[in-house]
Image (tube, rainbow, N blue to C red):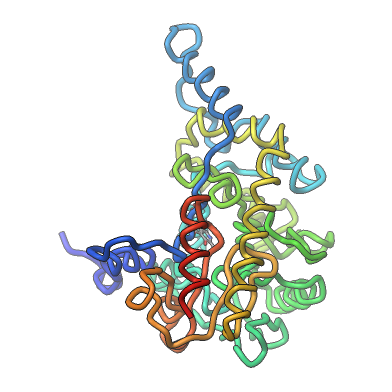
Length: 373
Ligand code: PLP
């Protein structure tokens, strides 16, 4: 038995684990590097989870495999809450994470698909392609242009991995930019895979979904996740929207191919996770308040860095922003931050700051930063 060389070449740990290791052994560290919502999960969601779990105590209430593509109720709620009911249940697939779904699409498209994405960006767009042996091309976001994405710079592609609002910049695409990218996809026969992980954090009028026009349904799929805004990263729950209008080069339906692919390789997401998702989507105020609180912190934090003379970028429509600095915050102030060069080597001299901070750590960090510079 031998491993693919491409897999051997991967880093042993990912950039997020790498940064946590950096702080090992340093006492009293507080982190601004965490890309994980600290929670808590609302009590009502937990109560309904327990009720659902109790059903499994009885032979009559026990359930076996869930439907491979997800429960009808959760699909309906996602459709109502995020898409104004524009999709059929058949076009929505429940999954256990965007990361899983990204690699599913990468595997489905195979090594001959040429993929593009903005950089710096979420590492799986590149690494997943690397594993399957597919070529990629990055479009580098320019600090001189405030890390704003420019769809006019995008050359032809088979697949474009779009993250809007983007991790690590916290900047979302405008309607015009989305339209330009969709037109490019149609002109080159490519597909956009929109990672909408952070969409509910959008504060401006920028679109929360790529499906702003009927035409987008011919050239895009969208991935959504409960990880970031619902603090479900430990629960695992996400979805993929694959519009019936997307056609492959031979004229066949992507939806049909994806359905068969999924049924052959996946046995569905836990009933319990899906129940939790349903409870949350029936009570959207439970997460919308939390989202607002996080974005408020991002703004306060940006203000704090600005007031100390740092140049900051992004953090407008997402829970992250960038700071231009050569300061080693860990060594000097015991504050862990994420170097932007971990995402992309050419971005030395910037750090990513995260708004995912627990109440307790928020107090400590504010005091430390205020007294530090
Ligand atoms: N996409 C982006 C842009 C992310 O930042 C992350 C997590 O950090 C993920 C996807 C992973 O999402 P999930 O927990 O749904 O797998």
